[in-house]
Image (cartoon, rainbow, N blue to C red; front, side):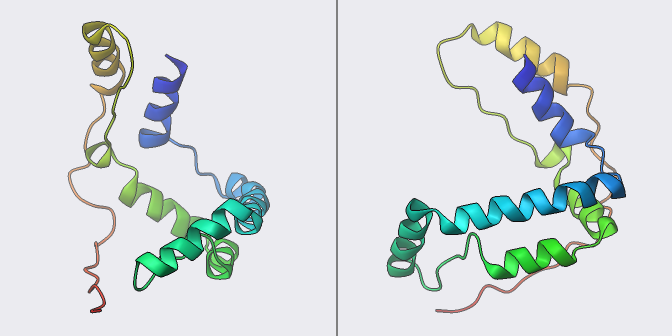
Length: 130
């Protein structure tokens, strides 16, 4: 029940006050640095370099720079563009009563309303050719 409630909150009504964003910025950067230093993450990125061209950079100095430089309004705009009910998916896995879980999900998420229009103009990005 708590997990479903948290998912609903993240996907529909996160409080993105500028002072909260600034307070969390340092912690997010520390998490990125921790991921970059993790040997398993480094191994995964080396494997992706072999498998994919170009390989994705999951955690990078560029991500740190973007995290440091993003304004509170840019982060709010990003949230409102991407964290919307019409972009959500919920998958339930395990041994449970399907009707009971479906009822809980519909009870929690059924009242969410999709925005009538995107708050930002979505941009089309060309995929690089290989």
